Length: 518
Image 1: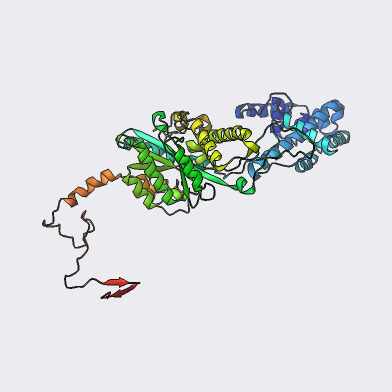
Image 2: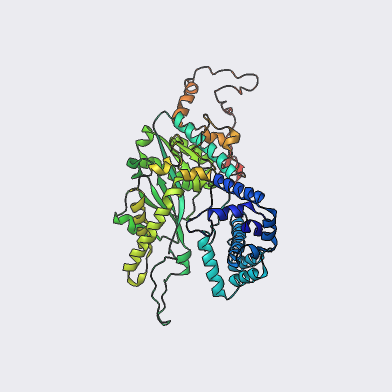
């Protein structure tokens, strides 16, 4: 009852105290049903308590209980308010409060109904030397399951929006699986940046005199330099080994001499490539080139299976020329919804963290054996290829795809993904093709794209069948007559009107029409 009174008749504070949260080791926040039961118990006890006892607890609590119990109750109310403040700052404002902010709120949270002697003890508990304040906050974090750290900066997506986008995305993927005439092969391609000189690697550092500085030598250019890794994974282990793994570097990061030495050495796996371009960023041309590499690497798999390339909605991945090129190669494309890659893209959820860890580990091992710890361009590229070979072809990525609901159904979606989407169990996705309004949720709001041309994918082999009736008309055959409305419904494309033989073709020279070049 003291906690209930000092907290301003806050039922949740009294219920948390009854559950042992914040003072009993191992106790955590109660479940919703248990918390409701505790709240009802506290309020019921308050209602049935004699009025004289309530008055004494409110006005003169030291007459009813000892000073130690009053102090503990007031301290609990202070820390309960402090926890509520931290939770609001973390979840609503995106702030990890500093020590000064925490102490200011703690002093303002001292219960006003507490006796003056108890208030003085609480002030001395919170305020003091910087070391004393740090020790108190460290003990506070241990009691309330908090930590000292920083918040990760990311794009915040509302749970309802996540669930809506995920439903459309899974509906699109399920339609691809049901519509496919051949077994489906899903290939996920995504880019990540690989730094030239990784920094911040933790390890053992020996203390010593200042005349022997302990430093990781790296130029500013190396610390800022990077290349793009176009990684490809699929749930089929037999195909994973032939998927192209491409390093896209600009002309400054990889010299021509280093590139020629690596190509001439013959030590690189056949599916790993280095593209030296003017820029290390993916463009429409790079995307079309990747599609050609993917089709060439898969070979007969393209004819035997329905290949689906899963990428994010980066603008470099979306263009009509890319759609036409993918159609020529019989590769269907599907897109992870905007701002949803960290939950629905296998490369982000399961692969890149392993690759980066392998890269840092291999970098540390190689740098430790090199003279003066200097890592050359060629060694750096070999380290990247070693990290790729250690992770991508040796890992079975089936679970990574299945746990995200990308293999035709969502029955095996992981509990973590369901919780991120605000679901208690795997979703029941509607059947059929997403409408244009629904499919538009996959793409960024400001992007102008014909979404249904991507949803209703028609490969080139199917287009040949549609062109057969037009090709049946020979040179001398009579062509169908156009309708009065301009033959808008005719399947035969209108032919360009031929110029009369008497009309002399116009010749051009330096942008000007001339009749004779002599």
